[in-house]
Length: 213
Image 1 (tube, rainbow, N blue to C red):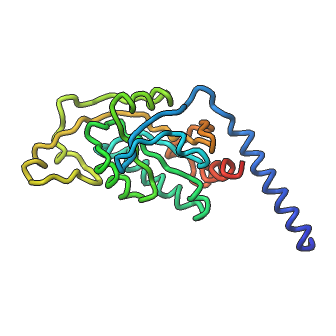
Image 2: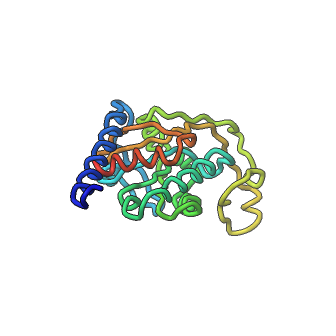
């Protein structure tokens, strides 16, 4: 059997080999991503540079999305739970709404908080959102421009209104949108494009590799 010191060295070198393997498979995706300004779920203006030092998983969606977004956020909840508490402190899950006209900061905060209070929701002006979408070569398209009564949409967190009539009159636009999950390193570089079909263990391994870079 290896002595404790030799065993420790062996484990350390093996860890470096694993990290190196991930590093080789995670090149910087040039031209995908960049610096931007948005509004966080507390209504504060925020710069993307504020996230530097943390590994980021960035996703696009909106609160009235009936199927894809709840599934995606459920996946991200499981992904986040697969990290240690220390790794969670070094990782940020960022959800950017494509529907800022409906998803005001307060509503977005309640929606995101349903999955995990550590998750970050970003809104802003339509121009700010469209710029972020363009940076990541993402897309979204409206499916119902006339507005769909939100009472007919299966939603995780309905928006709160002062009275029942306001709730009945509430309408929303439905969208199709990019479902890519963007994995960013601590410098804000996009390093990998993932999906909800990515095995959680594999995704967690890539996050850990970037944490330890």
